[in-house]
Length: 185
Image 1: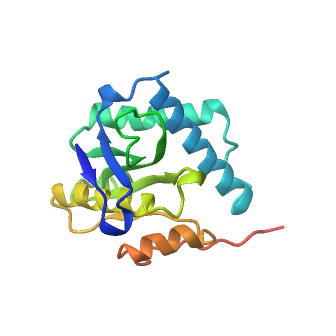
Image 2 (image 1 turned 90 degrees about the vertical axis):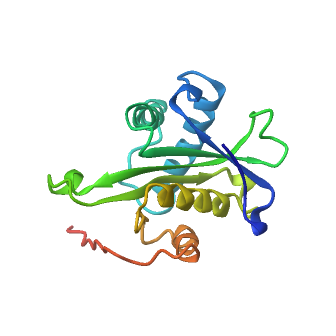
């Protein structure tokens, strides 16, 4: 599935991956690991030093989780990969990716009555930022959520990550559940 991005992001092309196209050890797999590692490193350095270090094993496990969800629940999960216009044919330079999957009350309470799509990961390569890539990914994620018949979608964000918070707000997200913490020293 190729989807041209919105008018402010005309340079981004979004491709929805299936499990067969995400092969462990492939160039694509390694690029997603690299992007995930960059996100984890940035969040750890800038906002929360308690986050796990972005080791190769940690990043591999994160992409393996995406692959597992795409394999076991292809109708309820989607990995969207962004390429800058012209790169989508070569598929050499991933500009960013977003992973979204449907969750349910069973994940929290053991009750399977209510389901919602939740964005688990959004990351854009540093050199591709401010070019509409994240907006294109968010727009495609919303289309996926609507295709599920969802009435809402969710995303988590660290309070200090004001750039991500602003992006999500621009796409209509509002605070829903706030977790506060107090450091005890």
